[in-house]
Image (cartoon, rainbow, N blue to C red; front, side, top):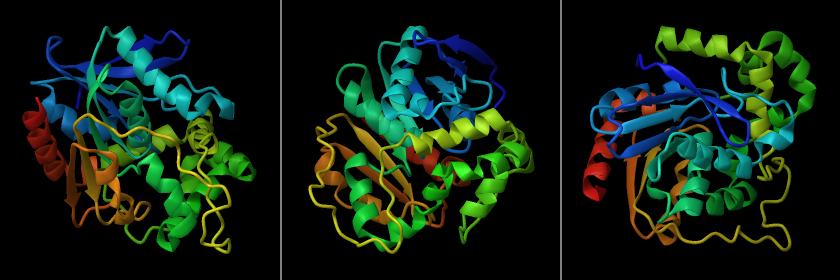
Length: 299
C-alpha cells in the first residue's frame, strides 16, 4: 500500500495522519486499526477496494505521527468515537461504512451504535468484542479472563520507565504469553518496531487500555457477576453488520460471538478457522472475500 498520507486537524484540535484514497464520489469505508498497529493494518483491504470505494484509514489518536496527548483522560471511548465523526466532518463525508479491528473494532461498535441510520450505513467488525458481551465474559468465563490478564500489565504504570527506555516491545514480550505468534512480513515488522520505539506513542497507546471502563478481575476473584451489575444500556444495532472472527485468537475466544444475533438483527457472521488475532493481514483473502460479499449484498 503506497497511498500518501495527509495531516487532518479535527475540530477538537487533535491532528491525525490519514490515508484517503479512491474515487471521491464512491461510497466511503472508514477503517479503524487496533493495538498496537496503524493504518497499515488495512494494507490488503485498501489495495483490494480502493478502485471501487473511497478508503479512509487514520493513524488513530496516540499512534505514530498523530497527536498523542499523554494524559489518560484523553483516551476515554467518547473521545475516540468522537474523533471518527470529526474526521468524517473534516473530509466532507456525510455517511460511511465503519470497518474496525481489535481496539478499532471496539470504537467501531460505538461509532455504529451512535451513528446508525444517520451517519453510519453499515458496520464491519473483526475480532473486537461487543460491549454488552465482553464485560460479562470477564466476570464469568475463565478462558476470557485468563486471556485478558495482559490488560492488567498494560494498565500498570510501574512499567512506564521500562517502556520509555526500551519501547513498547519490551512490555509486549513480557505481558503477552500467546501460544501462537503471528507471522508478519519483515518490512511490516520493522515498521512496527520503529513505531513502538517512540516513548510518547507507547504511553499513548497504553492509555487506550487505562481509560477503558472494562473491569478485568484477577484470576483468584470469584467467577460471578458483582452485586448490582447491569450491562450497558445499549440499543440494538439496526444497520447491516458483518462480524469476521478468527477462531484461533489468543486474546478473544469465540465465546464473544454467543448472543450477538440477539443484539444485531441484520447480522452476517463469518468465522475464519486456523487464523490468529490479526485477521485482516493473517488471512487477507478470507477477509476480503467476506467483505466483498457483504458490501455487494448491502450496497
